[in-house]
Length: 432
Ligand code: ACO
Image 1 (cartoon, rainbow, N blue to C red):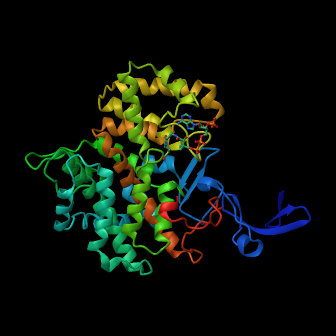
Image 2: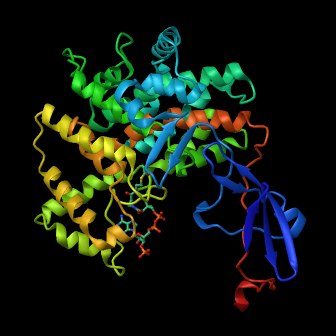
Image 3: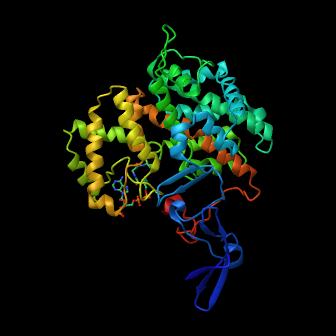
């Protein structure tokens, strides 16, 4: 049993009472500081999925899952999505403040000055099998980038950190586009430094050396907004991975490559592709949405509605709310008539009115709508999680930097409650 008073919590068991200090965040969350629990009381906590455990204090992003609020460095996601550009948001996440006009120009010019990959890296793309998953290539290429920039590995040197964050941010779209071109057997398109971040990525993805590529401003802005919406989400699975890898003082490229692998899973960033796979399956199966809703509710069936539910948002996902409106606008402006959209809307309606989903507070998440928009912009499904990774990069880097600069950071090393055999004697092979 515990109660909070005067910045501490008391935990009582029988006659014994122990006190723990509490830490209060700027938005009122209270954390019980148990860092002396093991040393003083020989106890540890057990918390599957770290659902109740803060591993750091952070000033990057605030999420309120009950009210559906998301803010980067204090700025509402709705305002940033409506008014900012992706590099502007990246600067904000990395530096804590919105850039002045001059700072933004300088940042954009630093980014466009580093978009090229070392030519030797091109051979690496060639080594992958045709059709290799672009997420595998992306994380391998990001780890490989560390070999070209060993001079910037020292996480304690501010100049090295700055140079490595600029390079990674500038080159990731080039890596992503090369991974895609490799997968379809088309020639790599070099970056164009006269274009903004998203437009340049589009021309590397969809352009061909034999003809000019015309940038559609609707598509470029839609991509920019999607990247902004994905830019950070506090201590999610991939960001925690980046922090954990980085806590061993591994370099930025190695840490971010770890985060990309965590993002790939279908319960995290892989969900946006899983949504389209699910909608296509429903479509091919005759479009019977009820059948799939029933399957999702059946505890004997492992099937889940992809794009529904969230560990933190138990009201609605504010990114999904922005994207829902944005999706219909973009699809209409691009004149896209996608049969999967109809199924998505039906599914959404069923789930939002079904008691199973209402009771469990399962709402469409960002991936439910982002997949539909990425598809309408012309991106193949296998690139969706790569797009998520490009968007999430500033968040990963901001957290990595914050973790390195925090004097309280220790190497991440969870404990366990051992549940295996007690000591036993070795038995020779012939006697088993
Ligand atoms: N379809 C059907 N039932 C679901 C779903 C779903 N998508 N999500 C959760 N549930 C049910 C669970 O079976 C459980 O039911 P129970 O209480 O009867 O046992 C209850 O809702 C709670 O679910 P948990 O798995 O405990 O919730 P958790 O917070 O651990 O998981 C997660 C969150 C992983 C996002 C989950 O909702 C899920 O698997 N969703 C589908 C995948 C997805 O869309 N992922 C993207 C997340 S957003 C992002 O990464 C940007």
